[in-house]
Image 1 (tube, rainbow, N blue to C red):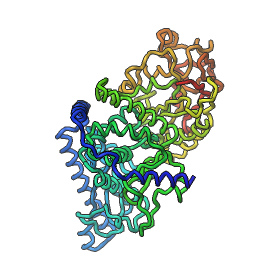
Image 2 (image 1 turned 180 degrees about the vertical axis):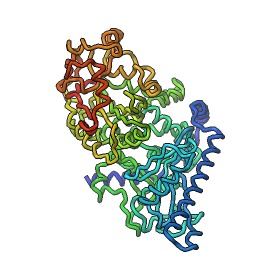
Image 3 (image 1 turned 135 degrees about the vertical axis):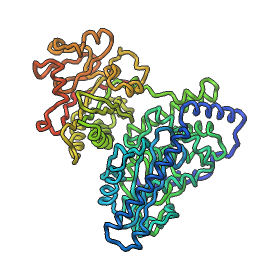
Length: 596
């Protein structure tokens, strides 16, 4: 395996030279003008007022962190000289620094502080409390146990992600250059990861041949990825830095191409890319005197398991796409191929560029779904609880893949539905399920038991140390009927109206029910009338017998008691906290495999 990956690295290093330096033709320039017009109509550019507000927010935040370090130095009893020189500095990175952010985008920021300002006590306590007392700051959330610890909040309505880098310096100069490798000397691992967000962004800017064409192309690819539901690092797809690195590599391969050409080449190249050959903007830097670990599958067993390595160019070089799973890689490759066909149609004047950015009809794509319903008593509790669950949803996908030996492919949709359920704040995540290519030889209609991976996921979620009463999570299997009405409006309508009937188009139970369930009908759940109109009605998992079989023909089940359906639903959302730690309900035992 190591020799195989070593060959992959060598193969990647052979493609350092451009594939083409040809200038664009008149036809390509005309196509590029059409693409530019399409992007303008997509509303990707923020207003002048919002741009000015962002600058004001960053200036205000910089003053706060400077005051923060001054207070720390005074509290430590340092000399007047140290207090006078006390300083911290705000850097921006990510989409804002690259110049590809849009209306409502967050700002990735990095606070660089001196050696005496700790992360645990000073950043997550003192600075956190200062932000909490700032009237313009709302929705403040500390995520101290993340791979890269972060403070998330809104400042005058602008979303901010704030990282902290603690340098081995007593004085932070205003003209400090943190792009130099020496800045990482004697720095803790978490600070190295925080600092590298900025350092990687600066390297991307430096390594692309034309920053303007890079920005325009990246805007197109980001819009496409969001429309297709494959823009999310936490869900196992690609985050902003990975998409930026993929686009930057295409810009290196075609340095004189205009954005319309680069978009087409992007899909042409990556549909043919032989993963896990890594994508790199430059060769991996090894042998540094700092001795920090870099991505190297020859030495690191964990690196050998990476399926879609996209390597960051700043030392220490790491894989920005380590979250990609077998399922999400397949989904992305499918979408790459679809996009390539659209680009060919655009080149043939069969369709316009707007066809590339049409939203993916997620609800039409799958017959089986898992719905992960997260609930809490307040918005702040839901924000923290939802973040914990979302950051671990990828583990559920990995467990399902492992448990089904790759037979079942999972497609998590990287948007949550926010709403109210039974007087609780709720966020719902949806995972599409279907037979994967590895399961092509499995007989049609074979059932797959998902109880074990769901139980394991439950145990993982149960480790949340800040869980409060009212925090609950439900995993529900739902299946869309073959004769259900078309969900042509897509998930966008579902997101806009979280309690709309489109939720019912994905059903937990089939149309034919056992007689006990048929009799227990209420005004709120008019099952017979809804079924007659081709709709499905959702029922919580707990009221369905554990032996319920999910297949194409009939589904029979029985209620565990004679309580009316609406009463059972009430207890479903208000489950006793002491009786059930997590409010977790059993998943129906089986899922039938179909071609979709």
